[in-house]
Image (cartoon, rainbow, N blue to C red; front, side, top):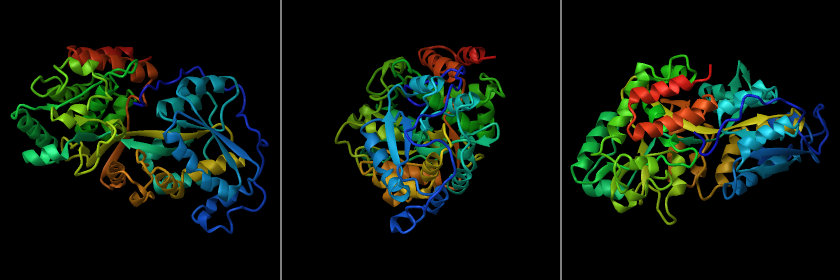
Length: 452
């Protein structure tokens, strides 16, 4: 899930068009300002939109400081090559306020949508404009079908992917592993053998935390999604997310029990914090810290956790902490990857808006963004991204996973479900499950909450 994010309700109605201080609509005109600039090489598509000098594009997003600066820096080349300015606005109330603005007829030109479910809601309201052909072509070239499908609603393509995160990671201490002679597991069975090996030393093999304020429970939903994707494969995963099979189907129960074999076994958890119940009260931001103290061996958490380690922690293959790919449970489905990301949705089709959409969907922008993020903490699934431009080892590893031809990507399931489930009962029931509720009761309660 997108932390602390919730889907807007389905009752959005479009009351007007996006606001802007530039002229509305119209055909592209004038000579492309980037025509004679070497730095604009690779952005020739932008010539389709003409001279955009004096125009501006407003964007609205949940990306805030310190990450905001890197976003804005990555737009400088767009202004150089088109003449158009970009007006950036971030908000920690993004989902709620975007709904309000759309209802009031004050939608931004572009919004970065972190959930496919929210995109579907906005498209259903009539607010979102279909992406131009240039963007569609770029996504076909640089991302592929899996990613394009998340920006598509009822057969129409609306929103290109932007940034991304890999959720299928297990964090560990390279030094602890080396000192104890532990190998990085390549299969689920290997990981469970390692779990027993660590437990035999007196160290709890796993630490975990699912407390996240009103979003408490979301890390446990990621566990289930990751295991279901591995156990049953992408087709069954999609059926489950879309409620084409019941939430409490036997295949889902089997996957959750496999999670429970780790998270609900007192021999395995919760290193550094307490018993199984402590998982529900341990903040996810703090969950990995016992690894640094040698109190636990592993923690399953997304790539964005790299920013949660205490200041000064060396996040490298030979450093204080690093991560390995969560192994598959079988060899039937290649290399399943669970992840998340943002999508670029437009509420206006002026040439400058379409030009900016096009820019963000290119390999050129992906590399500009990487170079504008020297501290790390950002990656894209764009296959044109040169990992040499990524400064963080965990970002490089994420890019390698996204670009692996054997990888089968699926988006976070709760972010695609109706908000009553994905940002509601799925969270609360996973919390109840951790603290003693049965697999059957938890999954049945979620199934019964699915909107009719």
